[in-house]
Amino acid sequence: MDWGALHTILGGVNKHSTSIGKIWLTVLFIFRIMILVVAAERVWGDEQDDFVCNTLQPGCKNVCYDHFFPISHIRLWALQLIFVSTPALLVAMHVAYRRHEKKRQFRKGDQKCEYKDIEEIRKQRFRIEGSLWWTYTSSIFFRLVFEAVFMYAFYFMYDGFRMPRLMKCNAWPCPNTVDCFVSRPTEKTVFTIFMIAVSSICILLNVAELCYLLTKFFLRRSKKAGNPKHHPNHENKEESKQNEMNELISDSCQNTVIGFSS
Amino acid sequence: MSWGFLHHLLSGVNKYSTGIGRIWVAVVCIFRLLVYIAVAENIWKHEQDEFECNIKQPGCENVCFDHFFPISHIRLWALQLILVSTPSLLVVFHVAYRENHPNQKLYKAPGWLDGGLLCTYLISLVLKTAFEVVFLFLFYKLYDGFKVPSLVKCDLRPCPSAVDCYISKPTEKMILLYFLVATSCLCIVLNLSELGYVMFKYSVKCYLKRYAKKRQ
Image (cartoon, rainbow over all chains, first blue to last red):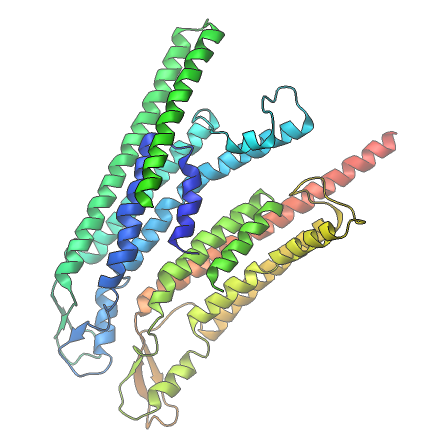
């Protein structure tokens, strides 16, 4: 179990996301998780070993390190990424539940069921409407909340996003105010700003996706209210054409992402 | 053999679980296993190297560390994850046994709980809950609550007198411990709800069958 397993789980959700949702997922995996694993973990790897205080008093370094870093940046990012990824599971569970219901209908031999076999049910892509729309929108809302909470926690705990070179510590058992030096402060500041910038981009993508979904919802409602008598065949043809286009767009996006990540 | 094996095992169990069981698998895989591997392991990586006592007496640090950490938090956490995941194997074995013995009753569909499989499923839920409670109790007893102090006083031989020993990253360890406790409690709640749900569903089914028979 590692970040790759999370990628497998969320990759399944990708099929039922909007285009903005797919872009968000790509940004998450390439610019956040990959950067965390490949680069940031190495920068913070020696953080306590190379945290040096200008004293020989045993225990002073431990206490000062604990005082200035109650929870390390790298751990906070890992937790943020885990929490931000999990609302997508709500959508995955909802889709799985729908598929389960359709399979049950199919097995009962329900005439309403329009599928030829179970494989077709398994491969079907559901449109984001009805209860799935609510689940999807709630998942985006939770993502936004988690991102905002973690950004605020960062800002609050570390008094901004800069990593200072020198910290003054006078916690017991340090004999007096002692100078403590952080290892690689500039590199850490660069990565912190990078991660905050990508978090902000993800927040913007989520807000855009939320606006897109809300606009689509209200447009659909106003159409229904405006045209109570519609020609079902004509609307179905138009909808199926739109479905085909959506599928083409989503497949090409998916292929691009797979090609890029491989 | 690594944590991937456990993840693979839990994913296999998913097929025979109820909806709540699947949520339990997701919580264990993501909030416990993934957090353990990606976050917790690194915090406890150099716990003994970074454990420092205010003394130069050789052996004093070793003895004090061993006294205050008879079994490290991280190892206890790993044992908890393994033991809590394994009762699900009972269900997998039961289904495999049934499939390999053609004379026995086959199940209507994957995930269909009835008769013997239902008993096995209920036993696995009870065992999972019991293991969770036992480990939470162990954590509480061994470490006197879920706090990690930054300073401990040690006066064991060969330390010449009461010596101050400093634990590394105590706040970070405490935050992760509270996270562990919260996810354990969530899993206990999920297990108990699933137990209640399965028993309720089965009793309703039994009652309806009896009622239908009486009517006939």
